[in-house]
Length: 627
Image 1 (cartoon, rainbow, N blue to C red):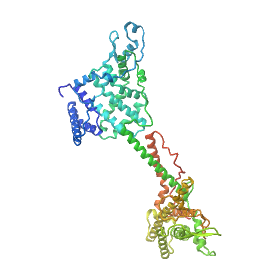
Image 2 (tube, one colour; image 1 turned 135 degrees about the vertical axis):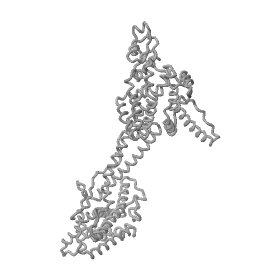
Image 3 (cartoon, rainbow, N blue to C red; image 1 turned 180 degrees about the vertical axis):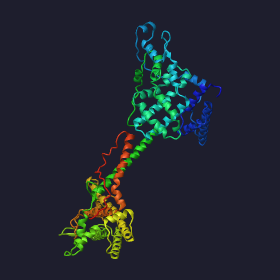
Image 4 (spheres, rainbow, N blue to C red; image 1 turned 180 degrees about the horizontal axis):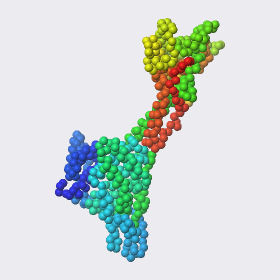
């Protein structure tokens, strides 16, 4: 290798480095060349890595000897001696030579007299891209053109290529399609541009240069077509590089490469003038950069789709699909929570939950359990302000009003005709009914032991947050928090029955009701799980001696779930409270997901088909005070 000059060695190194390799293979190359700054040693290091990779590939082929290896096609990027490279590049295959449209040029007296276009003479003088000669009959490419392609140093080229490759592979995770496409177009231009320096070493003809620089011309035309290209690239590429541990220390060299590639219209000659010079020399006609852009007819960059390789495109598609699922799930969850709030809670404009329904519950309980002539106003006041006494009343009320709906037979019909029906399989809610009995017994024991214990909702809220200050308060606090958790869990089970009924009603309204779902109109509930089924006898009227009298069976289950959910909030069940305030987090998540979706697709997520409900903010309103 040392028999060739250092200049030729740089050319060989560039050809070797630009060979097409897998990402893993290229990573090994990048790591290897960091071991030395000497170009000859770097060439040997690259060859060694390539040989090791080829040996590994051959070893894999040996595992399947019956398969014939494919004949390798010669490639321009493969290693070759300087003389071979020169010979190959000076003798291009005429079949591959593209026929360039011949643009029209100006004429005049000098053209008639000497056969030269005065516009070409003027162009040569102003741009320094063409040498005219004495009479201008045989214009040639100026030496100044070659300098444009040889300005950057080796380390600037290498690190800039690596930085742009990083942007190509990872940029879609940060940038919208337009920014990514602008930067990736520059990436392709830069690689095509620096690959042309070796053509000047081989002294190839202008015709060959035009043929081999076609991609560079197209990428450059697209680069110049946008005035914001430089700003986009300089503002975004360095930020990406700073996040890479290996490349961040090479930022000065990378910035040099970027700035040079973006200022090629500030050189003398400009790159666009250099390209025009080759067209002029080949066609012997004046050809401006505007003429060339018309010849190339390069389409503009898209703003809504990433123009990348198949691997990147697939990653983007998978990410968009994942975001679509997540957004749909979040919207469904938000709608579900909003439906729950609207169905079971009364929320004012400030987001406070109203518990005024408790007045009706307390009045109904006293009407059925206390003598009419008894002065009960003082007793009522205690039940409204003392948490453990209110809890006792609510549990007793539930036992007397709702227990039969989930355990035994109930009467339905009217005053003239009544039937006894069973709604739920006996024993399905046995754990819940036993839990109520257990809490009631605990409260009875506590009230007998501490009949004069004073404890209000303000103290309950304080103890719930900070812990009880004495043993008596600690005992009752434990009962209250246990009851709150029970109410929340119980409410969820009843809500499943209500949700299933609403799903079946929706199917019926849409005309999708099948025989299996229809049969559940009178079939008792045997299990609690999400499915399409009606509440049995849902449209029958209830016959009772309490406040449920005259309601439809389905309305009784809604009332039951409503009371249980509100009881859970009153006694501060954390899961139920979090469920009501979860919409804040869901909205924040949706905003982030929608922003990411819009960045990747260039358009907002289309949720027109997803039903939206009002977005209410619910505060922690469980500090009920004097009810």
